[in-house]
Image (cartoon, rainbow, N blue to C red; front, side, top):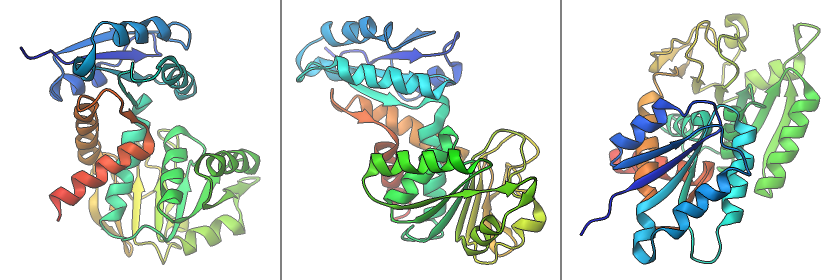
Length: 297
C-alpha cells in the first residue's frame, strides 16, 4: 500500500503562504498541513508529530517546510527544528522563507549560463537583505570575488563577517553605496570591475541608476530580482530573460521566475526521497545546478 506524502508547512506569518501550499501540491504532495504564527517554541510539538507517527521507510513520506516573511524568525525556527531531531528519528526539511533560497539559487543558475565557472568579480546590491545575503554567500562558495553593497558600511561589514564565519573561507568585502547621497568612488570602482551584478534590494527601490549602470563596462550579466516598479537596476524589465542591455545579458524577476519555480518544485520532491534531507541555500543551489545540467547537457 502506498503512503501519502504529507508536508507540514510551518509558516511564521499570521496566515500561511498560499503560494507555498500550491507549489507543494503541484509538486506531488498529497496533503499539506498548514500552521501559522509558528515560533521556535511552538514548532517543537509539530516536529514531534511528524517524527513519531510513522516509522522506518515511511518516515520519508512526511516532511517539513519552513516559511514566512520574517526570515530571521524563520531561521530561529529552522535551527530549533534541526535541534529537535535525534539519531535517525527525523524527517526531511526545506528552508525557504519568502522564497529567499530558491530565488537566490535561480539567480545563480541564470548567471552560470553566461559565466562558467562563476569565479569572477560579482557585485551584490542590497546585499544585507535575506536574498542578497544568500546570493553573496553562494557566489563566494563558488569562488567569486564578491562586493557586498549596502547603504551602511557597518551593516555590510557585519554581514560579510557572518558569511565568512559560515563558509570558512572566501573572497567577500563590504562596499558602501554612497556617502551623503553621492555615489562613492569605491562603489563606482566596484561597478566598473564587476562581471556579474545582482540587485536584491527592497521592492520598488532603484539601486543602480542608468548613468552608473552604463559604467559597468565589464559586466557580462545583470540580474534584477525586484518585480515591483521601479526596477532595482534601471533599464531592466521584470520580463527580461537574457535580454541585451549595454554589453550584458539582463534578467528581470520574472525572467528568473521560471528557474525559481523549477527549483522550488524539485526541492519539494527531493524531500520525499529520504527522511534526512536538510535543504538550505547550498543544497537548493545544487538542485538547481542539477536541473540546469540535465536541461543543457
